Length: 402
Image (cartoon, rainbow, N blue to C red):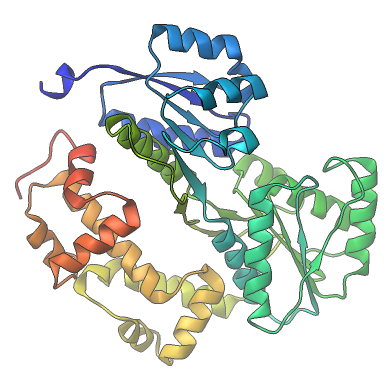
């Protein structure tokens, strides 16, 4: 009853819905709005739909906030920039909105971690004579960040990276693909290549096929986004990194809600969302021992994380040294064993907060945290809000007292 008395807030959601990323982001936004019933959203399914006239119309009826993944037409971006409407931006806002100093906040994929995850995974496949990266043709921030993470992870191993430099003006153009084919043919084999996103990965595979390069024995290929329709229909199917686009949408919606409540909040460093995992398909397949080790370790952590286990316990379960367990786990998954344990513990914390009325002190103990104060600090640093705020925003209607 109390929530229904809140003033309705009108929110414009501007996404590119042509790919799986946009749909998953929207799912995360709707997950947030289910526990914030005072939101009324209007969806613009392509950035170009958010025209100056559309913005003026929304302003005329009372626009309280905007969630956007692209700035849209320049004139619209200028109108938004000069208004005081709170904006939660997913990704790069472009040069116009970047100049806004208040009423704006940013959420992004942690693309450097994406790049490092790709490097760790490809390195886990066994000895390769060369590693390559295929970026976007235009200078996209997420492609640049993924390349940076990819290079850094391999540099730590003493390995360099060959970067494809396209002469074309668009990915998939005749000039671009011809140069890509020659570049792939020249890579010392066996090679491993990361493409900046899945569409680019399918182009890499097509050019390998044209050059009679065997996949994955001569060139292993990994993409990003886990666009299942695209990846499964490719020949061979594409191994891909799965970003957490649902969390990206949820975090953007939560951020906008905070901006609308506290309108004096100024922009700060972007809130970064880490990727979930590597989804294996035939274009790059891990060696059986590494895959088996990860599978056993992950199952053990999932079952025992809340019991207070440590890295040494996982290593003992696997029957290998702690150093080897952590090394192989990070090579394959892109995160350490301790990071994985923490992630599963915090998932359990969130579940208890949403579905029970148990005190935070009790939840801390049941999830393996002896010191509730430590958990409170960790939770706020990880999710950007207190445990009490998260419980209030995500409470299920049938939360028990158990």
